Amino acid sequence: MSPHQVSHHLLLCATPTKAKCCDPEAGLATWNELKRLVRELGLEHSDRPEGVVLRSKVDCLRICEKGPILLVWPDGVWYSEVTVERINQIIHQHIINRQPIQEWILRTSSF
Image 1 (tube, rainbow, N blue to C red):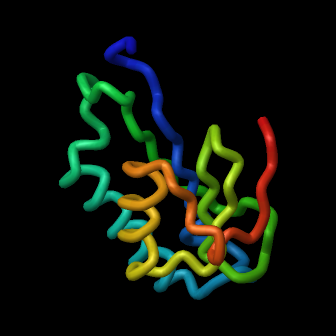
Image 2 (cartoon, rainbow, N blue to C red; image 1 turned 90 degrees about the horizontal axis):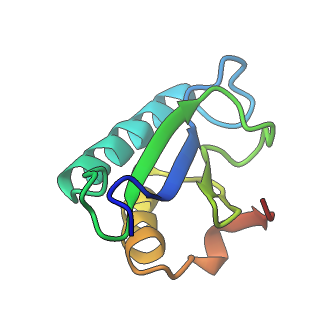
């Protein structure tokens, strides 16, 4: 694999301007935990054999319910109610071990 290949891009609707999907404070806490995990687990290192894991905090993913919402690209998995507690398990089980957590998936799509 190329040293700059992307393994996953995680888009978290964390701090919505209109706050329809979740409490912005809960979203920000989840975002901070996501950043910490990606950094501490070395997922953002360009020499990671599986590819880097990118992360983006977005204002709105247009779901507007059951947030925070996490979109895992390129897998097309949309997780709902992504709390600080859930993000850890999502990172370990889905991103590292490549086993999506079915019971937390709101929807799937193909890209």
